[in-house]
Amino acid sequence: MIADHSIEITGKDVAALGRVAAHFAPGTAVNVTYLGNESLSARIEACRAAREHGFRPVPHLSARRITGEAELRQFLSALRDVGTNEEVFVIGGDPPEPLGPYDDALALIRTGLLQEYGVRHVGITGYPEGHPHIDDSALWDALEHKIAAVTEQSMRVSVTTQFGFTSETVIQWIELVRRRGITVPIRVGVPGPASVKRLLGYARRFGVKSSAGIVGKYGISLTRLVGSAGPDRFIDSLASRLTPDHGPVLVHFYTFGDPAATAAWVSARKKRIR
Ligand SMILES: NC(=O)C1=CN([C@@H]2O[C@H](COP(=O)(O)OP(=O)(O)OC[C@H]3O[C@@H](n4cnc5c(N)ncnc54)[C@H](O)[C@@H]3O)[C@@H](O)[C@H]2O)C=CC1
Ligand SMILES: Nc1nc(=O)c2c([nH]1)NC[C@@H]1CN(c3ccc(C(=O)N[C@@H](CCC(=O)O)C(=O)O)cc3)CN21
Image (tube, rainbow, N blue to C red; front, side):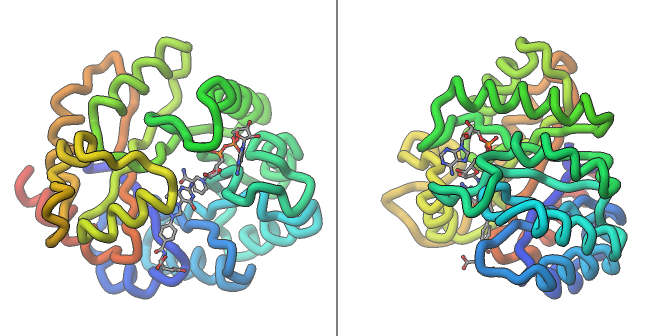
């Protein structure tokens, strides 16, 4: 699970990631978050640089933030020009109203443009704890329709989950996914090591549940907010519960502005395994 992990950064983290590149296996997938306040050239440059550091960039496309077909073509074509168009991650995006014609990830996938620009693998989201503004039935429908739409276009698909703090919830959700006959790889999203304040701040910002009971299992005490917390307990617990029946399950680290902290954690963890 750890051996084939992926990580997620923003464009601003690429230089920091480059400095710790040696801690990751060559070809590690690096998802590049689609921030609302970044220019096209900044996004492309981040992907290009990540590849130069030996990573496999996975640019995010945020359906609701893309203003139309022209902008989508421009982005995909720029990715192709720098050779980072093989794998992308498509998300609906946070804006309550879409900026253009794409309401959700499915609408963007259905344009057929991904395939046209050489995309071979499409990542989509999963929500083991549900989503604060989207009900469960809509999330399940979206998951099934997106997998069908990607597969029909002869591209591969995998699911990466929103980060969370409890492995039990993740395991139960994976079992529900598999019971639906969905066999695609699942990357379980987990925060890299970060200060407790930072973790709780991002959880609040993205609507991830963080009650005392939930974060307690992760090793966070809401009455002692000092210090930092890493994914050790989460990963150990996940690994001890997974069976071959859960199908392909991997780990995805959200680095939250500090890729070096995740690099150090991964490196220490690999030494322990050896
Ligand atoms: N998990 C992650 O890493 C990230 C998640 N997001 C989230 O993306 C959400 C939806 O994207 P996907 O998971 O790809 O779902 P999706 O695009 O496949 O949509 C699933 C369902 O939710 C509806 N929906 C999509 N965006 C919505 C929004 N902003 N508000 C209300 N309903 C929405 C869709 O119409 C559809 O019925 C956003 O609301 C945001 O919270 C954004 C960036 C990263
Ligand atoms: N609903 C939802 N929306 C999202 O945008 C989102 C999620 N969920 N789940 C997690 C990922 C990770 N995301 C991230 C992760 C890190 C930064 C970040 O490092 N921001 C810093 C630096 C600012 C910058 O790089 O622009 C910050 O200070 O906020 C931003 C978004 C966005 N993501």
